[in-house]
Length: 289
Image (cartoon, rainbow, N blue to C red; front, side):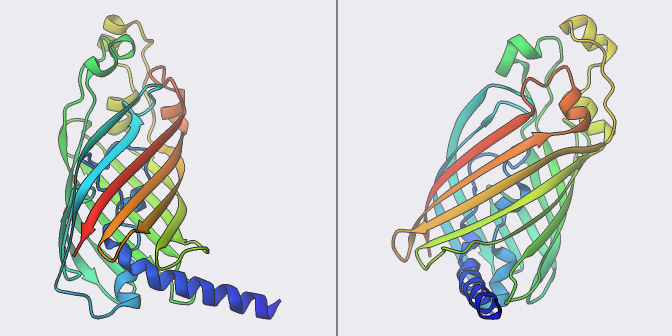
């Protein structure tokens, strides 16, 4: 038994050593991470492991390419859409970064196995025209900037489990607060050419956010035919994500991310919600140098 555990630990260390290369291997599609059934950790998977396994990071790291994502039209929708766009990920040491998936960010606190900081992203909102049959009378939710505070912590080289938490404040649009707590780690079976992560997360949302996304005011009830619905703050979803990156050459890579989210609480009970299980799939191709 002891020998088996030691072998598993060695495999985990080898897998985790490869994980630091994943600073480019998250689903940086043309879309923001809000809303999306992809787990929040998937937008930065592996980054906190970089300095743990590779202390001497290059000054600049750049990945450019193209990406596409299939996801629901909006939270709770039964219809999906596919959107594509550029893959952009530019990082300066472990201090600052610009990426389509995460936004513009700074690691205010950083160490061998942790990082914490702030970043600016955007929320895609929701348009009635996207699903007129279900959203008529509810009004649009405009696009809006999102300010996020985050922290990630990797336990150790021997046990490279990563804990991540974040709080996002949407300024305008959905005009509320959303928070996530997630864990993930490298998976056995990874190699120099194939690297995988997986892990669950849980999401909390305040009343203002849930009211905009899932609530129905008296005025909206009259215009839409939905009953009046006043959601309560609380846990709004739990989910599971998996990310896999294949290095085709030393510079070219392909990344696939999948996730499933299950809506809970007021989000699940809302009359607007047509499907409580939300799925997303993102594919990206990039060149790294």
